Image (tube, rainbow over all chains, first blue to last red; front, side, top):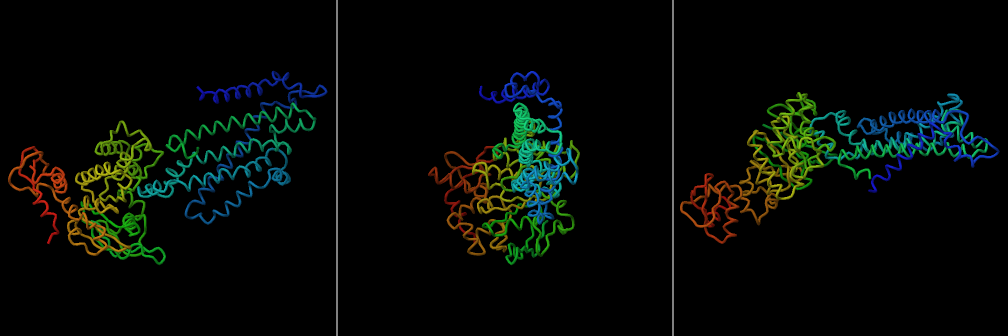
Length: 251
Length: 312
């Protein structure tokens, strides 16, 4: 009986989110007490649903680019020819993670101008590390006797990678992507400081006009998106892992 | 025929396999025995070039095994390993069809071959084909591993401790299956093990390795009767040498004329089993029955004990 409760909660959250984005005025009475001096309770300088869509689009593009680069890099450094690049790649990816996104934005604006581009660069750099490290883990922890059997069956290096090593790494790679997406969802909000269209716009507008209702609705939408996407990706991982009879590996 | 000529493998200064030469006759089962670190697995893996030798050559039916790229060579040689190494994300049928798929067989031919092998190894193709390896028992997984190694109809099958992870009862069954397969397909099998009992039971010829060198290469009877060195003698185990010797012969070769009371034993059982049964039941003799159930004579403790003595 308990198994369906979490699912029900998530469905409720999803329904609430969809309702809020499509008809924010329904929720005005709830948020009204948080405003002062008759300020508007619902963000009125743009549509919340289109901001949410653009927020997701920015995260999707940055993550897709990070997946391509991080997975390709991890594949490269696990091939015999690329092993010597492992320490270098690790350092580069780590720098991407340790460099604060705000600083990346500040440095990127003079180069590429205001708008979505600097945000994409910051999110891309920030999202590389989890995907790279997890892909690396997946590719290097494929059971030795499985790889041995694949070699013994006469698979070439590429065939082993595509048919054995990558498919077996899918659950671990997905876990990396999940981390990266959730970090990016939250980080994308600061993109609005350089005029990217994200939900951060709502939060920043609230901070500037001392409107708690704006801050709260911007934050809650991002949080709800993050929770739902995190859970959906977790479910996908479990499905992939179960198919391989290795449910325990990612527990 | 597999000709191994002066093969050596060095890692740094250490020779893991040191100047080994041997000829393996076609359609035989050769067992390479040794302790861990003796170089037996390395020797095996040099045959399909999972390990490249430092010097020396290996010829398969007269052709140097370096004349084709390694992955193509390995598609023509069956390979089964301990813990079977099945691909966990592929079904049993896909696992078995691995090499045929690499060789570009059409789907119908692959399916026919997979079904044939599964039936041969007592796995119902309809029930087990679509399952994943983790849904199978250890013994079933091992059989799938053997089926995968045999899928592309290789002339040569290499096995690296294939029964190492099995419990004794399933292991005996798996060994019988292997002998049946060898008889049916006439595959040349080279099997690596550390278990001399298994070697004596399975091998037409036994190669004993120690510290990278081939110490003795002979028939099981000769290994038991005339161990070349103290090491081989230790490996054979002085205490149950006579029983191992008896295990090589069938009861039909030890039949004496006459009759005896009590339960009989089949003519194709091993002499060791006959002696064990006699000792356990406290009898001096027991009847021997042929395959159709008729009595063909008897075996006696005295007769068997004579056969267990060291051959002169």
